[in-house]
Image 1 (cartoon, rainbow, N blue to C red):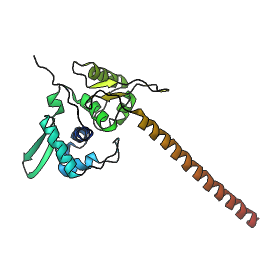
Image 2 (image 1 turned 135 degrees about the vertical axis):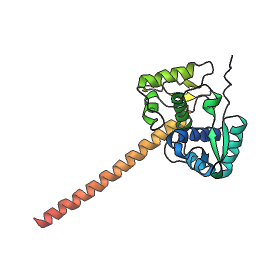
Image 3 (image 1 turned 60 degrees about the vertical axis):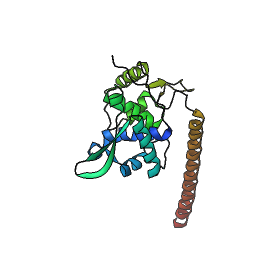
Image 4 (image 1 turned 60 degrees about the horizontal axis):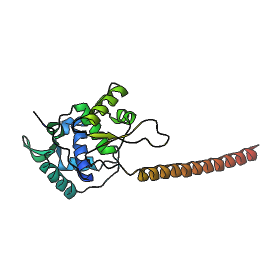
Length: 215
């Protein structure tokens, strides 16, 4: 009888490198496995990442070494290129299907998400048939003998529950940073809106003055 290995507790760097390899295996299969340069660029993307990071080559190399020791990453050499490339082995080590890999990947790269957010952000990685399919996959991943994810308590005013992966341990995420970011975004938006309204008021006054001079 096969026994599913226990999930390792990965560092933030390991989560980002593993998630980036998962993503690129689906989104750009023609360039996968990834070279070191491509993997560094994938980790440091400004889009589809939370938080945005700026890893250097040494950080990614050290992280790849740690993931190799855990059996989650392997190297590929040979063929027409002598450059070492890297691929993830998550779906080899753990008995999950491609759609479930997509969910875990998104949670690794973006943090806790609702079923709707998972469906919206899956992009070219996997085309979910419906929200019901997403929910069913989440239930499978959370209820497996070796749980991969867990449901988080709903925040005030939130309609959908969020889910987090368990590759960083089962400690609940600190929502204070998210709330600060939300407030910061709202404040910034209000300031920008006030600036636009002031500029429009100035333009309107200048236009009225010009019309009076012409009349």
